[in-house]
Length: 293
Image (tube, rainbow, N blue to C red):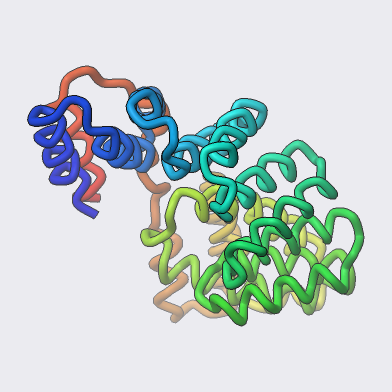
């Protein structure tokens, strides 16, 4: 992910054509990925001013607003995407995510269903629908949605987190733990490859996974794997001191596990949210710092 190079190219494109809406959209996506929220929103808005019929830029802006918990704004934005192109399934999915976060679960399900009419093989939409069904206690339907999501995409950690939480609510935490373990293995292997939307959804699942791990029976607490995974959750949630305690518990059981030692030594990822910079060179330096991490 060469963000500095991407920014240079988009900057050059805009110097050659200051009225190029897709360049603003794409540069906004880069700003969003490195946490420069204000600049990302400015570029999305400029792109929309130049081409108000492009549903994709509305969706990008909506995803960023969701990550900032600005759900009402996100709904107004995504409604414009639906108006611009009523056949774009991603727009209905993202409106469903907004409604879900506003705890309007039944309405969210309706929008997920509409999204699936246009994108029948979207694993993420099945996963989101499964979460909403779980909230209204339609457990069997929820689990079927997660099974379909896993069938379509077995590499997405957020799907396993979601199913783990659904199983924990409808059955027991011991079975749920298997899904959390699968999710965590994927997170550990691919933590730098997640897109912003998946990062946001995975983040909510981390909190829920941690609650379920905390509810495991005492007999399960003899397992080093459980301590390791709980520690990883805490580290991702930026509770470093608590994470170290869990890793120490795991190492007491399995002192020769190299993965445990590696995880204990990890630091929180650089995540520069809400950075503001007016100087392009400063922005490049920030990106390079991230790439060099």
